Length: 472
Ligand code: SAH
Ligand code: SF4
Ligand code: F3S
Image (cartoon, rainbow, N blue to C red):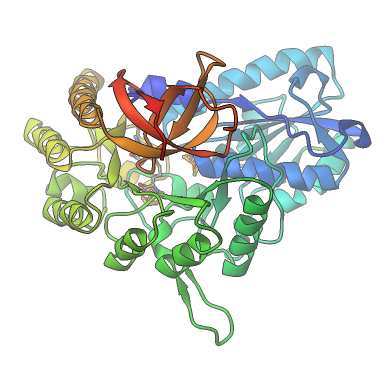
């Protein structure tokens, strides 16, 4: 699997120019350009923004230089994420100098964190909009067109954009993200998300089901249900029975056996046996859980306010292996949190070995203004130590991923084809249920993106499995 240091990961996730080609691009009077950074929720939000802008007469362009409105959907999770965005904004400034009428808007978490301070710090910015205020974007654009600076960073307890049909951006036509909730009520002390995204709220279950059904009817074959903490999904309406995450999963899975269902992210404290049994019951719910551990030391976990211990986490891993023996598991890990000792760090390494992760996202701790950790603790681990520990974590994960991939040799999986492989038009790329990427030569002309095919794994590279098609 692909193993990433903080740097590589940020590069991988950063800036994708989006070009929705919904309908005739000439039907729109003006053009917008949007670039997204950060987590899948942000990418999903950009699809809501595209829909809102389409409604108010803006069509998308892939080229920011020809846009009337340039938007950047930002992330605040680590300091480096914010630096990347500032660098990009300075590039937009150059374009704006040539084209003074162009408006620049900052959306997302960094907009929410910095609010109108953004306007002082980055002179080229005309519009600042937080994650719960996207419906006001057309009004803010109008305001900005009169030469005023326009800001809306109000957070909401209700907004879920349930009624907005996202315009799928940069789509492969096979896989799509569906947002099922917003915000986060956990107060992990290192994390800025509760401040930038506000209180947790669950989206109306019937609107989620309608969106998934519609995707299926349009040929999509995989939906990923998104939330910061999907296991705490809970939707109640009048006197109908409340819908938990397990119930929601079951209902999405029932749309069609040909529609794969994935979800992210699970919090170790909240994932229930109910969810695991629902996964076991339905072939089309993918056997893959992203279960971020953050640290292997119970003392550090407590300082992080993760509300579980090392032993609790190990018991969750055991439970997953017991109920879902073939489940892929991945993690997020932070190196060098406040007061972390060598012994704590060794605990992280040993918990990684215990969990046998197929894949991890690994970071060194980056102090974020306003978080509980920033207010309560000292960021006391020197950067060289943080980086050395991160390096050890990355190296161990490399080994674990290699072991995990080597185990796959000779196994046969049902693979959903997503498109051509990056390297060659003569090869397909798809994933198995466990979320591993498999690349294999095209053989049967009847196959296309969205088809399922059985593939036997014949080889692997560090990042990918290689295989060949076998008859069912
Ligand atoms: N809701 C998800 C995580 C969202 S943020 C969860 O609870 O797991 C994605 C990841 O970024 C986190 O899991 C964490 O590993 C990392 N992260 C968050 N804040 C960070 C910080 N201040 N420094 C370094 N990594 C951080
Ligand atoms: Fe951040 Fe914790 Fe919420 Fe995840 S669960 S978004 S890490 S506060
Ligand atoms: Fe970044 Fe905001 Fe997501 S801080 S990780 S874009 S919720």
